[in-house]
Image (cartoon, rainbow, N blue to C red; front, side, top):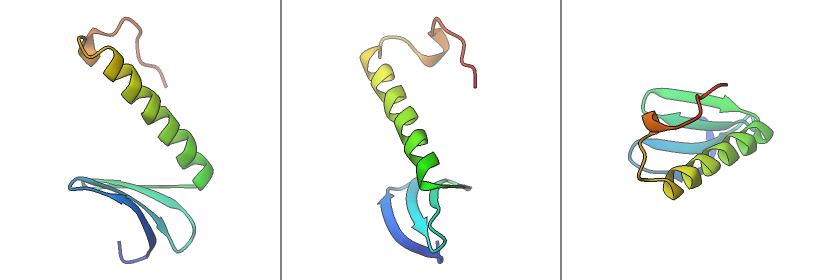
Length: 71
């Protein structure tokens, strides 16, 4: 992450940082996804919603969901 401007969050397996070009990067293990700040906001909202859904229904595994996942 030598071209980082600001580290927004970091733990052992993932990091979120903003590069000198203004992109937000989501780095997970060997994957580094760059996106605009607007796209990051949408991605973060989707992940937050998924976390709440998973937390509220933690008795089911992801493979037991009633609805198929479509993108």
